Image (cartoon, rainbow, N blue to C red; front, side, top):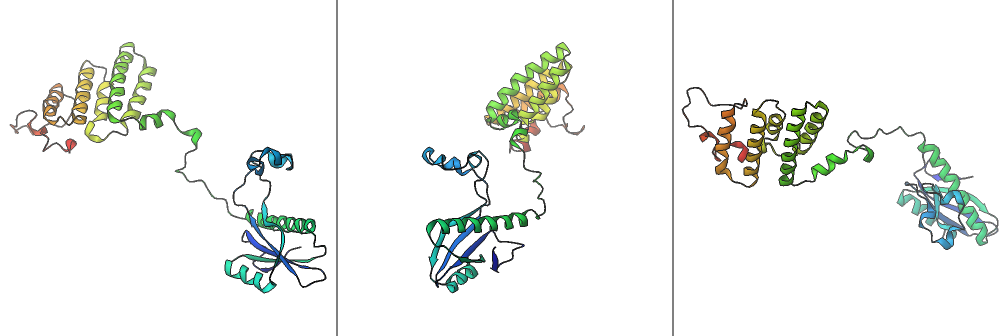
Length: 278
């Protein structure tokens, strides 16, 4: 039976100095007990030649062979009780008296250390069972719930991303011509997945809206937005105002100048004034 001299048996710290007196002498023996915070299978780390010495249940994957471990694995002689108490006090360890060790051979000291550690581990387990449940963070996404397509799409460089969008524009047009709503929804989802990480300057959302338009202007607008995106990627800013003028000429609802503004078409989209090109 453990007797706590330092610490609280109702709230063990998870690490303790265990000591005992050797019968018929002034000797003090001690070991250090630690409750492992992470479960593991000890058999996983043993060479095959030692595996046969471990119980089968302890070798099973995910099963912790021990909940509390004495280090060293047997009681060892220490200088005095005062030294052990000072160590526990300065290190903020629990200090537990195990009474008197009647037989002092190695086997007895091994067994005594194992019994003391097991009892300490049970006390700690009872204490831990009273802890409040910790809710998982809402930001933690289980690996099984991750969308592989989202992960792969996020890794694409911008040029490859635009290339994939170009392919999907054709697929969207084909689905529109067939009237295949299911296929169109799937293509739209793929396009948005690819476009999501792109900076606003590429106007990817407008490109997608144009590609999904059922009228004849849709493919033309989508093609113009794609050209514009490539020009931005290549930093060919002088070619962008004419493309913007064509987009406005088709009439996609993009903001226009004031009715009394006589600025020539496309002039307001020069690189120095277009916030998308910054």
